[in-house]
Length: 67
Image (cartoon, rainbow, N blue to C red; front, top):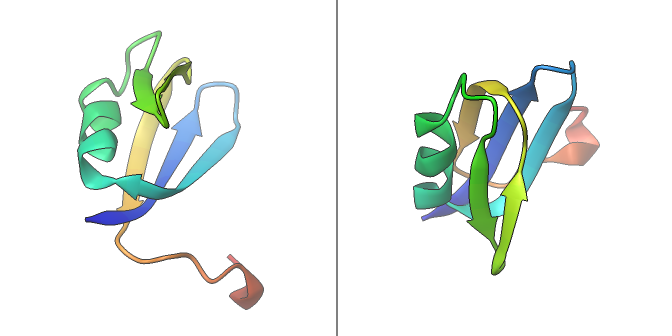
């Protein structure tokens, strides 16, 4: 199952990852509150830093709607 992961980072940034597997979202969620939240996306290891909270949206986000 693919969807959109929404990550809130310690530095007040919001990261949106579209078309991501739910297993990757679970991996990020398990690391919430850690200083180095790492996951592998498209064969690259990415460090998002400190992330909390994270949210999952099962479908694509309609950016034209105003999200």
